Length: 419
Length: 111
Image (cartoon, rainbow over all chains, first blue to last red; front, side, top):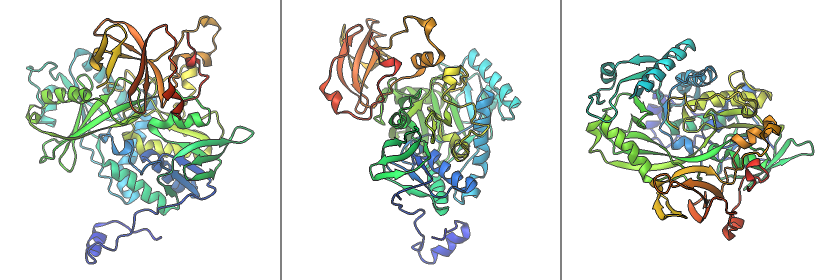
């Protein structure tokens, strides 16, 4: 299948045939008996890994197995925030690698992922916040990551709807702003990677749930059992988000993960009013405006582990309380939809992108509440790890063994979000 | 919101409780004899069960006491509530649930 190219010109050209001549963006593949590598999980991370395996490492006889439909998990459920202003060197390198890939992703994939570096502003409400954020600003600058401190008036100038009066419970005392941060269209990321991977020969197999991992006498991976039959392969990359520990258990590997519901909601669509992304971890509000006009609001995780993809309403109302204080003119907006996704959280709130004790089994998980921003970067280094059977220097610190050896990348207190 | 049946106070809304994570995790009785891997298992590894899960809750805004519950993490339905120190109730629904994490972790021991 020759790949159709997307451009303004092709849009005009196809309009002559009333847009009836567009082809499907990827094939409906059926599983072959054997692949050189299999990716479990058809979200942005998994599809991206398949794309980079084919593009940069020449592995084209590979498949992505997705139990539902691609991009239907956390890729389609997050609030699309992209930033890289993490405290520690290891994290800054990983997330900034990702931001750099975001910047050219639409061109590279020939697919408009609508990356919009509109700026991510994190609000400080306490003296502690001010100290922590200023420390972040300095640490980020040392790592070549842009981040700057704003006084409340400057924050208001950057985001006019913001209430900086001292008549609220937690007044805004300042903000840290990463101008290179922003948002992207989450569905387009999955579709863009799927289309680009498919064009390179990757089989994208939906409605195919992995039910077991077979290992040979030496313990290495030899096949996966799926709802659509057994598929032989010597390499399996697991990128299954909230179900990562379930998949890893099939190969007898224990991972330090707990799966929690994380909720988000959107308002009715309104005209452009909100120019950036605002986050407040202290009073727990995450908000931006989509190009459709909906205010996209991230709520918190529920208290308990669950696989239900739903949570309790009080978690959402808690966030809306904060939003209404910070942005009083949103008080009369109606909320249109809310939903949940299952996020896999590690004890140090940093991901795992690594080889596992099982030869041929690789793992990309533990992204917790913030995996979307890392999609291109994580997929890129994960593909490297699978293809070369050794980690890329960027993901080398993100092992499972760090919990045994004491080399935690402890963003739990440092990631500037409430977990 | 979950409706949680505190063994001491009765049914109360989830807001009155704080979550205590996986139940029946016993602190090693001879800590100095543990190697790093065993410590990592105790500190960080949880079964993260998809299915019936024994977990701790604390009635933080009520009687203040810890207790245990069995909950199906695929539906969020509670199957049993029991006091700390009591053994985990056997639950007929538990056998039907698949996909649970492997047993044999350090965390699976019942004190």
